[in-house]
Length: 243
Ligand SMILES: Nc1ncnc2c1ncn2[C@@H]1O[C@H](COP(=O)(O)OP(=O)(O)OP(=O)(O)O)[C@@H](O)[C@H]1O
Image (tube, rainbow, N blue to C red; front, side):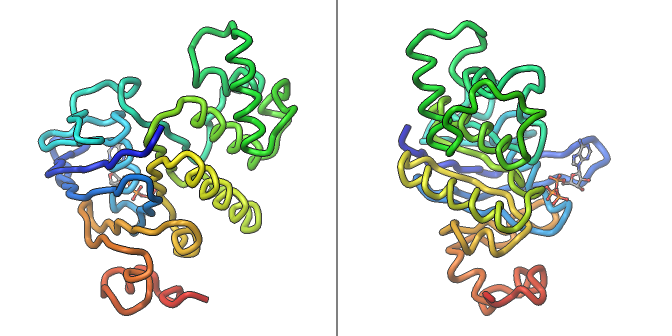
């Protein structure tokens, strides 16, 4: 599942006839981790929803690996998503939740079982297959969601504030897990985060949104060094320089 580039080419979207149009022109490089940052309401979740296919562009094109996927249904796009909450079916155990990434049928072949076990092991949850989501911690549930994304073997992984509700130490370990999985699978990862420390920790590229459009894009090392861009600096405030 080698990562593919994702390009938004003049993608225009609005939530309703009276809403201001958003417009996205950006590229997410293949096999890298790109952070998407920007003020609240700047369009980060909307951009991910457009790439995932939960929202449809009014005009423009979304390309993944050169394929125009603008009109494709979410399930036919080469992407997996992990959100902040509610990624799992509460009435199904962890193994079944992961297996849904392989097939919607609840019956699993021996080969499926092996893939589920392998994915749970990859996220450090070996042996957790029979556990119900309600009996797991927030971090464990997010790891199950990542395991499901892994078995889907899609070349693009979208993370929308996936670790936003976790404490700092756990969040760091989840970020390191994503970085490790990204290195092993060569996925393209697009990660929405509010925290510049997240981007500095694992992302190489940054797309900065402002007022429903791309305000800046480039390497994290340049855009978050405190000197590159006045709008990014204003957003970062006291976190302008790495601690
Ligand atoms: N379902 C919706 N219907 C109407 N407007 C919406 C809807 N979802 C989002 N919006 C509006 O679109 C704009 C962008 O929202 P979006 O959720 O993409 O921002 P965001 O950058 O992810 O914000 P946050 O950091 O607060 O999660 C905001 O002005 C928001 O109020």
